[in-house]
Length: 324
Image (cartoon, rainbow, N blue to C red; front, side, top):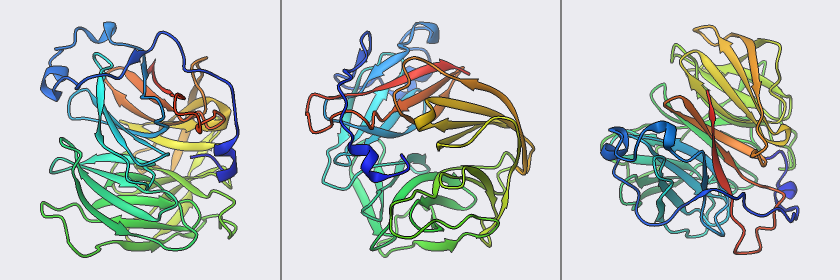
């Protein structure tokens, strides 16, 4: 997510990129996509258009080659077959925005609700809402989520905390949300909701800790999920300024840098305390990229297009694939 809410509403005149595969009709089944039912991966579309009036921000992939993305405008969730680019809205927007989202066990999607302060759970197959909990009230922005270390962990960009929700076979009826303050080396976020702090979140390669990028301090931190104690990750080269989504693939961390129109790639130690810059990915199709996910030998990057005129219902965006 961008560093300030006002920047999301700047007007632009850019049109949707040409040559994109349009999202229309139901996606192929996950099994079909995973077994190559949509043809060889080399022939899959490299640019997928999201529906008009749907401003994407987060992305998650799986099982198979099915990608899910949520809309900042009304909280709708769209599922797309990466092999064909075809997809459909599985959850119609009810008002709350959908920011980061992740596939979770038991056929679910867990979704960060942005400035509503909500955490939501929907059925991955049908899009049926299963639960919604109020993680925060007042000034808050529940931004991104990762599943691991005992459940789902969410960042709050306006408050220096993480929210934890256990992932169980039975969805709790009462709120199970636990708040974990970020302490230690963490650079505090100025109050008032005008500055973004905690943004993207991932697991460390050994899956024992969490990685969180701080958009305000332009630093990456390792978080102990038991205590909230943070230490700065020592990075050699590269940059995490404008850091938004984080993607871990093995020991390789991809940092999506929205207003830098780039993805910086780092090789991490197993515990995630140190990293070495590998390369910077740029692409002319990047248009305020926010998050990404890996499938096969491709990185699928979401364009939020913050500077576009989203009051125009015909405005759309894209998910673009780049080589790992």
